[in-house]
Length: 70
View 1 (cartoon, rainbow, N blue to C red):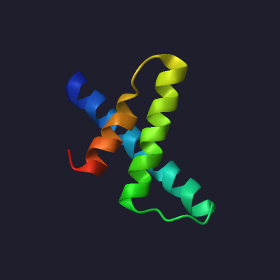
View 2: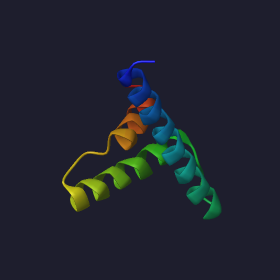
View 3: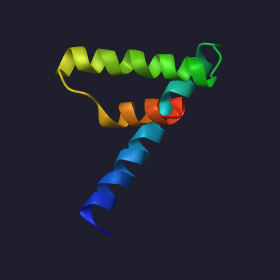
View 4: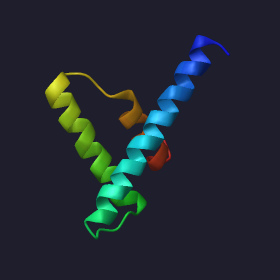
């Protein structure tokens, strides 16, 4: 497996983990976990990360793109 493939797999796995955590948080608060709500929560998370680090978080960005159908 190439370094690129390994990095891609790790990026995808982290994106899935983040979406799962977001679902758990929403469900724990009794909220819906539909696609639109997930996208909005992930965009909010991405914005917060950008404010704190000044950098884009690739797994969060990938999760948003995948859920948005981009």
